[in-house]
Amino acid sequence: MAFYDASKIETLYDQATLDARNRELGAQITADYKGKGDLVLVGVLRGSFPFIADLCRYIDLPVEVDFLGLSSYGDRTETSGIVRMTQDLSEPIKGKHVLVVEDIVDTGLTMKYLLANLHTREPASVRVATLLHKPDGMRVHVDLDYVGFTIPDRFVVGYGLDFSRKLRNLPFIGVVTNSDLIYPNTP
Ligand code: IMP
Image 1 (cartoon, rainbow, N blue to C red):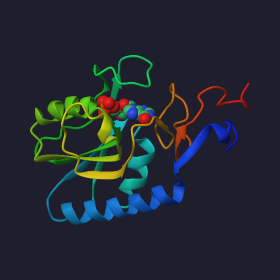
Image 2 (image 1 turned 120 degrees about the vertical axis):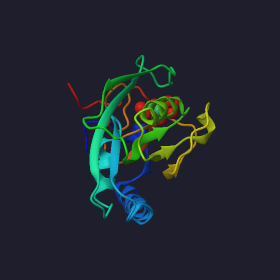
Image 3 (image 1 turned 90 degrees about the horizontal axis):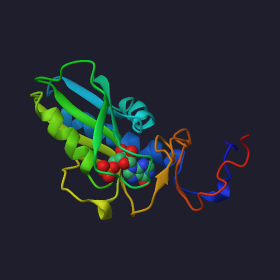
Image 4 (image 1 turned 135 degrees about the horizontal axis):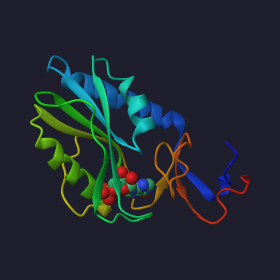
């Protein structure tokens, strides 16, 4: 891809590395949920869409896939802690095993809000799979059952993660080293 200046984005995890980790997580989830009953994967929009798409194909079980949308207020590189639901699930989750699929857990505030909300709907269980976790940023405790990669407290982009609503379509995860002139090739 050439719409951005590659010298401004340092690759942290390339496509092959992400794929290999998704395969491992999928195998682990398959083993853990085999024979346990209905499992629904709940993707958190917008950031989780590439991760859930790839991960679900490595889960060898008859899963349901549903989505909900969450957004923190403001256009930010730092979380505001105030979360708003922009889109709800399509189906009830009562009595089902729920696996929340998230792109990144930083402060944990978004996940804490979401888990409290989901628990009121009486699912059989709720677990969390996050591709990335920044333990240094944690402000509240949340149990993370499946973690793709633990990363330092740096702002990452790509593979679903945005920088001012863009860069979600990068096929790898990178760190923006210089936010000026990332898109020199676009009009
Ligand atoms: P938390 O509430 O601080 O855990 O933040 C969770 C949300 O913040 C994620 O779902 C992302 O949308 C966003 N976020 C946190 N860190 C990053 C990052 O490094 N890059 C892009 N988005 C991030």
